[in-house]
Amino acid sequence: MDLLNTLVDKGLRRELPTREEALAVLATSDDELLDVVAAAGKVRRQWFGRRVKLNYLVNLKSGLCPEDCSYCSQRLGSKAEILKYTWLKPDEASAAAAAGVAGGAKRVCLVASGRGPTDRDVARVGETIAAIKEQNEGVEVCACLGLLSDGQAEKLRDAGADAYNHNLNTSEATYGQITKTHTYADRVDTVQKAHAAGLSACSGLIAGMGESDEDLVDVVFSLRELDSDSVPVNFLIPFEGTPLAKEWNLTPQRCLRILSMVRFVCPDVEVRIAGGREVHLRSMQPLALHIANSIFLGDYLTSEGQAGQADLDMIADAGFEVEGAGTTTLPAHRADAAEAATAAHGGGVCGSAGGGCGPAADAEATGCGSACGGCSGHAHAEESPEPAPAQAEPGEVRPELVAVRRRGAGTDIAPNA
Image (tube, rainbow, N blue to C red; front, side, top):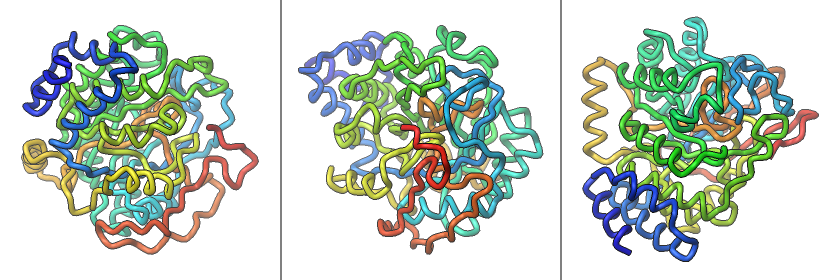
């Protein structure tokens, strides 16, 4: 197929495809699907080999968000039965993070619901970052706290954050139909603040909210323009109790076409399969690893993910390998640029220059003003954290230590997904 040959050639040269070419990927038939995946896989292997980066989400503050994001189970007025709790203590968050790191996670993503952090919140998260890094040598930490005010990105960087996540979610043209309490421009501004502070910028999208192909292409082109190091691709989980509860628009084939389009537009960035992959890709998840080079290990903010051991088995069975802590995620040209930005700001940003954070937002998880990914959600506010598992050596994967807490476990709230 001439289209796919052209897209592969452009991807290997880091050349932006045309909008028409990106739209054509989304319009391919199911008969052409394996050809599309194979073409995207050539681009993925050029820049990332067969490595899969694991990211682990820790939900610092859950529910009770004042924003009205239609996709989110934590939104203002949501009737979804989810866990709600205020800020975890640093030691609780560190204990939660340790389970993911022991299972092979290279990055921990700290998520908090709300419109955006106060300066006191930023200081609190800084203490949490310090606790996590003290107990887990070499781990990357990404913060996802919502809309940032002036100076807050710099404070997070100085506290040891490597990256900041804030998703655009959908196109500028349709953003007002999804959220009314803040604007698309607010989101762009926060990504730019993080980038300007020397943090690795992580920003992605949610597919399946009723958007058009044009909307999907628009938001991915915008992410390329913002030069995000990491692009989480989330697939809407239509939560009961939210305005988008009836939006079941995705098939596994549609998800694979969307991921492929993202890879062609953003060939050399970390493309992460984020929230909703288990619900919508189902048995075709391993095929998606030929396109994306990053996933979340375990659960999301308010919904269950696949069991951590199953994630590791899937990666191995598909012929991929978990990316070690000593490996730089991004290709050399992007990693060098990240290091230069770090030096310019006098900080130690993103030890691996690995770009990207979780959060990603899944349909439900993306919500909160933070718009991050889901979370392993290890602790209800009143629960005592379990003892942290023994720390693995850098780059060592210890499957027997993967302890992913299911959302709602140990409470009277049923799992949500």
